Image (tube, rainbow, N blue to C red; front, top):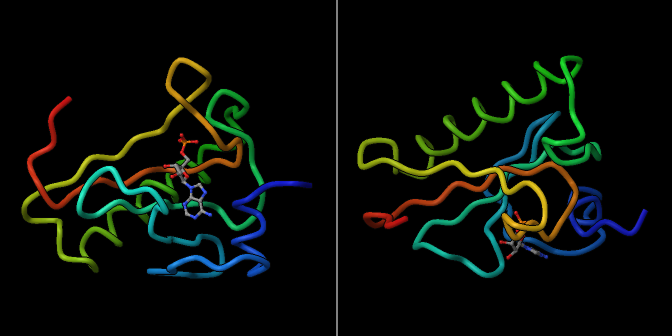
Length: 110
Ligand code: AMP
């Protein structure tokens, strides 16, 4: 499958990896929109939120809790952070491998 995030997960292309465990990988966004901009992915390919169902509750919960842990690790928990799922064209979704954005490091405007 020609998926950039699968290639990062498989270490076929480089990324600035911040955290990794058996299930998830966290790396810096290549085009950051905030001083801290991380991408949290499941290592296995899943489609976006719109493609998921009740079978994926644990996956989605685990992804969000991983983001919370990483926020603590990189030191942004106290000041706060934003978690974003882009879903579909109007949200500007570019990559259809499930991923969560973590943005932090300054007051974020909508
Ligand atoms: P989305 O719009 O939610 O699909 O976001 C995809 C994000 O992945 C964008 O913020 C891109 O800057 C980021 N991105 C794309 N390719 C890479 C890459 N090779 N390494 C790190 N981040 C990437």
